[in-house]
Length: 331
Picture 1 (tube, rainbow, N blue to C red):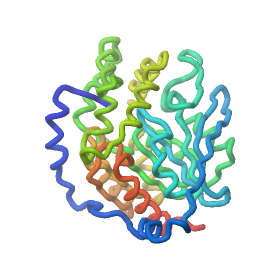
Picture 2 (cartoon, rainbow, N blue to C red):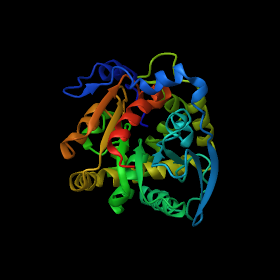
Picture 3 (cartoon, helix red, strand yellow):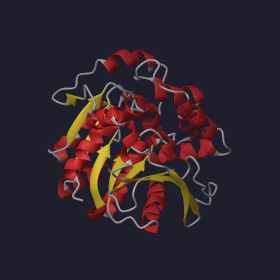
Picture 4 (cartoon, helix red, strand yellow):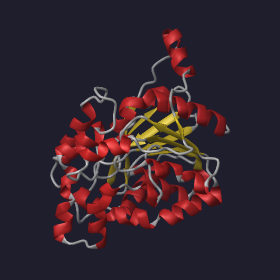
């Protein structure tokens, strides 16, 4: 998200960061992968449906796959992407779960009113996704939260804790120690929201910065260009940058809610799986470790991946999720 001049130099520091007592996921949960390899003809590829749901003035676009009566996983994407980021994960879960991935307002194919007619804030986004959940009749679901999806999903969880069966957080931050030094320009804008400080954060929206998010810290040669090319296309739509700058300012409300998110973890103790790309230059490993402070049973795995860990480690993440949810969800 934040692209500063010395970011490349920090790559070696980040990749060598100590992980303390947290286990590194050195291999995927391989049982499902071995089953597919041994019996490919017996594992039908789930069909992904592409749908829309009207929520007030917003037409929410979403992907859905899996049996309608199966346990639900609600996938919430981050900046600057869309439900497209889950394209490889959904088929690996949808034989056992009903998987739903909406595009957040201001992102992807979701159609939202223009600035001035819609509140482009995290409260506004959470209100729409909460309305979406109601509209399609979800009463129980596990949350997959990533980046911007974290404060969105945790707002839903605080409002209706009885609905949340589990939380999978993939570089989805809820702790101040999870923010790296790269947040400096954004934090300055939060403290002093002047036109000059707003303009200083615009570099985060550039084609170069978006590609950097995908490739930094990821194994060389494994990140397909499709994701960041699609995201840059969306960023060039009319008014897209101004909407994103509004959301950059609104992000300060998420940090202000961190104590409330943490109180929710302590009070309700949802099963938590933290799967973290440990080379993420923005949300650093201490943010994953911190989940254990308020929920000692949280399971934490650090992957040798970047911010967009699904681009290179969707098999590993799917395996960890299937194992975790298979143990934690009461069907």
